[in-house]
Length: 107
Image 1: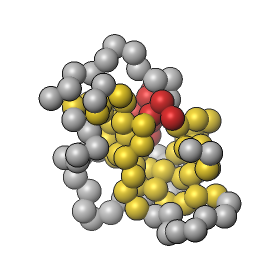
Image 2: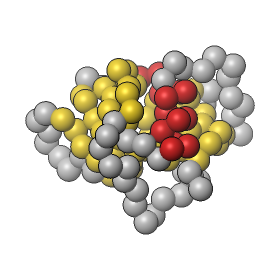
Image 3: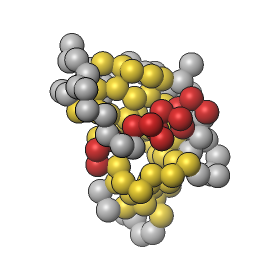
Image 4: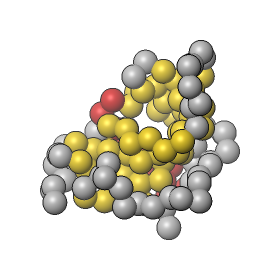
């Protein structure tokens, strides 16, 4: 099991609020604007990770943008709380291979 590092990415606090309040987030990840609904935050191999349900990619895309994603938090940029509806799926579980050490998850 990996321990959490002491350096927390700046986007962590906004994602933590989104988990606690079940709010969607608009953010850039790998140069694409996405609408994501954070469900869990934690650590994988010493890096902060977020388990999110992605509902949209704004702009052209070549695949269905909806679904579960495990994102590196330090690669999420320009994150803001969104008025888009918070969305989940019936198969949610905070137990994922994307996160070794769970810090917070929806209940």
